[in-house]
Image 1 (cartoon, rainbow, N blue to C red):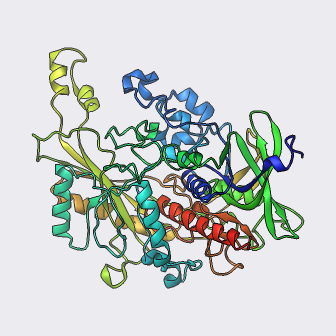
Image 2: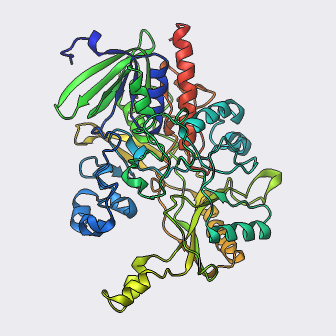
Image 3: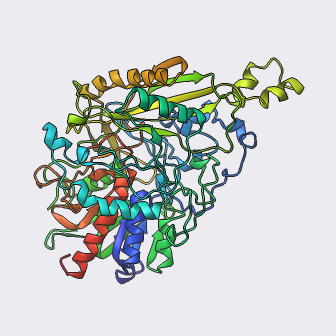
Length: 575
């Protein structure tokens, strides 16, 4: 395999694989440190504002924003399990299953986005910190392995990324959910406020707070760099935000990286493997399939490589990176790569209606609701359950929408229908639990070299499932949701408990976990691969346990911290 441009023209100070939330951060921090950085993205280029449906109303979209059944069956066999992402307004940001298949020993609902920005274009934007309740949990419970870091070590980096991202929220002084430097919170609406007040009065150990979200409610051009402005309360985030009101690589980290003059971005570049020099004990580059030209090339790094392809794809690259010195895959001497896959379990909660505040109408479409932090198994500060760890709730209140009014109307034309559309229905609250999953080495992915994707790369075999601890936890998750709604005055309270499978929360973690011992982990405390110290991994692969909170903020903090370490080691000539 040869490069027509020559080795020198394809050698950089640093290489970053992936442009999602963690890859974008790695690119920005490396470029700002002065390193000539190559960033490789598997999918097509999407520039900020290249969001074709962002300003369309539902009636302007084909099939009223629905995807026909025949198209779902032909191209999205598995993605259609998560139906709300598969819409005319957003389907172009999601991977087609017929082009990028995978095999299930046990059901796994894998949601992917291959383009510049990755899934940062359509993520849920909820930003919470792990606490020492989480960082010490494995050691305390005798589960899996201990995290090699604690909250105090990550706090400065949580603060660092939070200021740049711009997180709106409210400080609550809870030890299980550390606070940060917040922008003004998105206010709770009248029913959410009633829910907050009555729940906290009835259950003193439970807090209801505005969701902590990566939306600019107070834009500062000196802090929130890139191409950004205030959130416009449009709630069309999954389509891409032309205002840059929420944090995404396309409007934030990548423009800042590009402005340094140190960024080279190559799209349609599927990384086959990392090149490992056994004599030097370091990674020297990556082998890449350029999908548009069908050309195979090598890119080289004289410094560091950051692997941020997302949890499962990062595992696939490591497993494919075999050599005589690393026959089981790079960093996989201990057979830990691809194991210990975790995801949060949800699809469980409750809903109810409210008779109060019939004269109140919301203005705008607030892309956020409330959050109820974990309140069980908090040591001596909370109730002790017969299962380990715990869960939190995300929810929100809204008025009955026009679609129900139209459905119930006896006519589809005329003054009567118009009057119904101008008169909103009852208030409702829906809330969903998100529970922690324990690390289990039997939850793993392996390479399938017999089934290749459209780029000719091996695909993955998924062998992951939730366990008994998760099932026991779910017995409380719907019950507590219903009791809080009833305490808040809700009527017609309904619990729901749908079948849950890994992948559905889109929080996959753990395939190359951090640890204290190279025998039981893939990465050290600085996110370096133990036997390849110039290779850093800071996406969800690195997570040693899952906690019950959304993990993206932790990926960003780990990435910024790891780049700082890498630059220091390069300056000291240790890499």
